[in-house]
Amino acid sequence: MAFPTDMTGTPPGCSGASFLAGIRDASGMFFGALLFGILFGSAASVAGLDMGQTVAMSAFIFAGTAQFATLALWSDQMPYFAILISAAMVTSRLTLMGLSLGPALRGLPGPLRLPAIFVINDAAWALTLQAKSIPNKSAYYLGVSAPMYVIWVAATAVGVFSAGLFDPVTAQSLAFAGIVFLSILVGVVVRGVDAPRAPLAVSAAVGIALDGVIEPGAAVLVAVAAGAVTALASEVMRDAR
Amino acid sequence: MPDSYTAYLTIALVALTVFGMRIGGMILGAALSSGGEKTQRIVNCLPGCALAAIVAPAAMRGTPTDIAAVIVTFGLYLWTGRTILSLIAGVSLCLLGAHWQAGTFG
Image 1: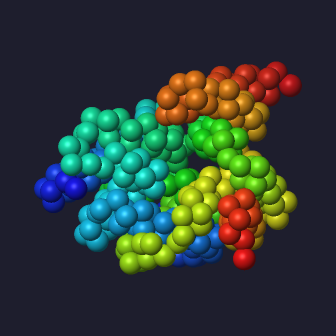
Image 2: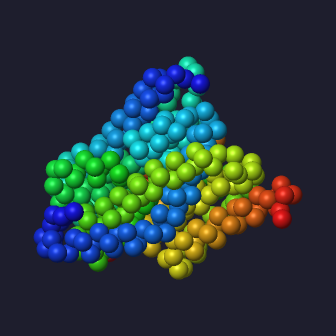
């Protein structure tokens, strides 16, 4: 696959190396996608979805939180409105990631742009923003995202066959491991993304304070708003120094 | 269970919704493209805020070993920068803690 130059005018020769660097840096994240893909496949099978429906979910939605949220409302009388609102709320951070990734993906040609937007995910966002020394960020992003997509879909199919493999205690603790995985992504942001750190702590505190008080998706939006205000204040103070 | 048509229609609608969330960010990003470095730093911060707002309350709702697993994973990643090591440590702690508390350890 030939990649275009990115906004920095990087020669195309750097694209393959950037793509491979994305694969290398995301290898740990692939392990997470494998684990949670299997868990999703297993959970979907237990919920009554057949192989085609389960794999279609992963292939066409490719967002674990939205898929699990849909599964929770899966029933004979499908509550479409509740499902769509729920999916939009839990994936609101993907909008923020698309917003943040804009400059990195702007170098992609038309045919690659829509697939690249389709595979926006937490890990690809975090790794791409912290990859400061990578010459072609759009190729790097695809190096993270494309294998992640393939692994997620394949792991989902494997998960269908492994339904019932885990005892309830193991299955419940593995479900919590999704939060453990997300904590690594917060770590990636703290370690390497060029952004203020204080808003993360403020959002975490607001998230904890609102937990159980308002609907979880709304709590995240309020926490992000609080983080945005803190980020703005951080930047103003940074300018003043 | 829903019939096949209903199931695939639901999947298609959710897929469109989630893609709409993704592309919405790119469209907004194009509109803000002239915002400069300061705007980009603020924008870069927001998805991390969303992740922090998901992880922190979920961790606090967990058992003591779940909380410990999140702290160990986050701390280990900050210290080493190694994803697999951090993930294995955290997931192992979750599993061991859950089985210990359920009395099914070993």
